[in-house]
Image 1: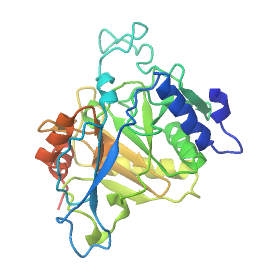
Image 2 (image 1 turned 30 degrees about the vertical axis):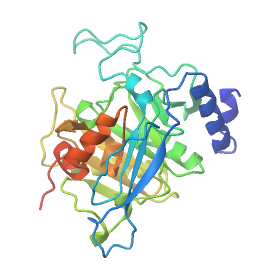
Image 3 (image 1 turned 30 degrees about the horizontal axis):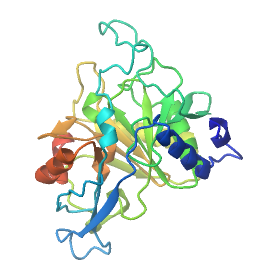
Image 4 (image 1 turned 90 degrees about the vertical axis):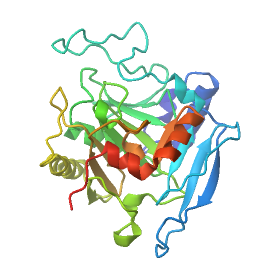
Length: 323
């Protein structure tokens, strides 16, 4: 199947062909994805009994049969996928075509994200939708700027939001778009990009809970309700305001004077989370981690999450909530 067959038709993306192409690329060894995963569910007795939600834990792992019982005050998904062990860390080169600037004064060079052979479609003439070479989900998508000089340390601009919003609107299934701004936010590549993940359909994400239904969250976040009928410009204005609120009074800037934070967008809500660190006590996370969606290459990753505890890890990576 040609990639072009997946592209827009009447404003939508053919997701059946999207999955078929993803599976083909996995079979061909172009995309790294571990399909031998299964779910184990546990009733979480720590969740307040008055909640109407039936909380459970979802633990996805490779077929070695090992797992750890995890107690958490909300729902969480851990994916242990050996395929993710090949994913390069921040600053590592993918191949000889990509080089890192010698000094901070040097202009950005070529992209450090190689999507050759797994492109899906250009978006708005400013971005490219592609499959993630190191996938934790089926499918796991990337939305990167066509301009390779755009850096992951800059806030989302209106073109970024428009591309993400149009892509979310073009997919018949619900997806989550995440943005990791800078190394403290959990990013692993510097070419500016977002990731799109299929929204889990078998547990409730905490931003969709209200009031006493929510688990106890000790980190700062800024949120707003969205509507699929909103324009991309309206969503962009909301995002800009939430980033301003998240930044206010924190003084969180790294050596390059950018504001480390995460942005999470669905068709129904948007969330901005300021970051103080990329990890806590041996547990690292990107934006999806703050939703309880985490993935890593080994059982050690899952065991560490269980030992530290997701809420504690979130608090250590975020900024303390103001009373």
